[in-house]
Image 1 (cartoon, helix red, strand yellow):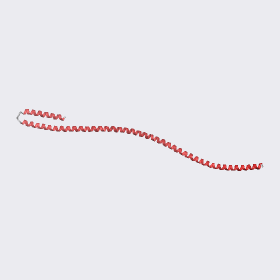
Image 2 (image 1 turned 60 degrees about the horizontal axis):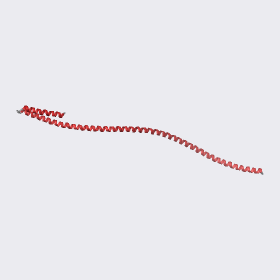
Image 3 (image 1 turned 90 degrees about the vertical axis):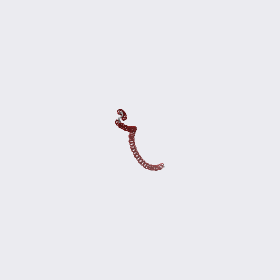
Image 4 (image 1 turned 90 degrees about the horizontal axis):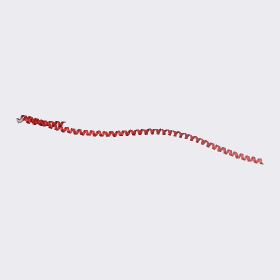
Length: 173
């Protein structure tokens, strides 16, 4: 009986082992499927990782380019600011110079008006003195016709005439 029991024990063991093998095969198939899924997921993640790396590299290139452009733009802004400052200084100087020239122009106009007023006044005086000279010459002519001490009267009138002409000449200067 020993052999029969042993044989029966082997059969039970065989059945148990076959069941285990079947179970392990099923598990192997199941895990193989899971492994295939994991490999596919791994490939997918690697593709995504490569894509993200390319995107990161592109972004780094873009960032470098933008930083260079920013630096160039900052230099342009700095240069334009310096140019604006210089232009503002020039405008300020020109404005002061313009104001100074306007004041000088106004002073010249004022001086010209004063001189024109003087000339007008002197012209009136000259006309009056010429009229007086003409009157004196007329008087002198009348006096010459008169018989009374004409020589003395003539010298007197000539002296008056000479003084008035000198006054007129002084005024014209």
